[in-house]
Length: 323
Image (cartoon, rainbow, N blue to C red; front, side):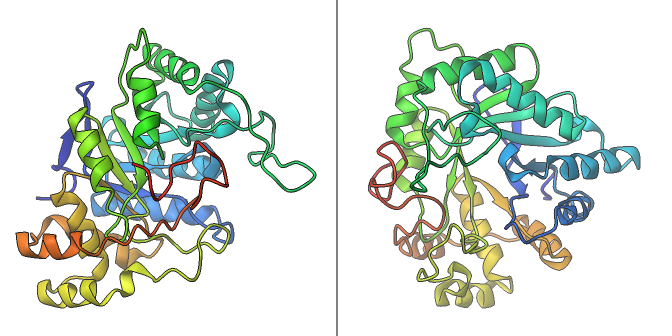
């Protein structure tokens, strides 16, 4: 069974392909690499493409998608496209502005899924990362429930078919779920998730609320020096993953991806290498034993490659000790 046939039903009735293609990249990677990689990914069978306003590559992403529509490889309805509202657009009047900017860059009429990228608002303006004279981020006082109401309006007018969140912990999810007058529940929560950070408690909570967990950084991250602590071990170098890769005659990356698929987690695979992009579609060609799934569960070290690692950064960010 290939990636086109494997989907998960969302709580609003839409279906999301369980294997997605991630497009974030370190700054040194040329933006046109995204166009090339997505064309290869679509040809290889990927139908779920994940991007965001802050990646600043949606023009190139849209070019790739539209070129594969024009050449007859896919129709628009075959593609499941995700974008995200950035932290400087959390004020209710700015949420739709951010989405419309993305759609203009993409030259698409709608996104299939629109997410709140992070649960924290930052000062609005042209700078995606506003900082003060001391080099500290400048935050904005916006209630996440007000941002969510603006997300609901984007769905109502058809600019987004589904809406969800990203990088939320349980407490932040509950704030939305318990909001008076809630019209739509988040369909998903996209978070860092891999064998070193398996998010078991958060996954169980999301399942109990009919919210799909989507795994970003599923291969451990690209180890971008701006965001990743280099002292952390590289996931794909783990000897357990290496031995399983030999056992199943697959790559360590495929073992890590298959682990998520069997947990019912939608997983994003990211690569700009044609060989690896094609290899990652083999995730549906084998199955891990229950014993091997347990071994992978036991690899959990609560290692978070991306973002904050302590409450000193900001009291509302998701942390190692929260779910």
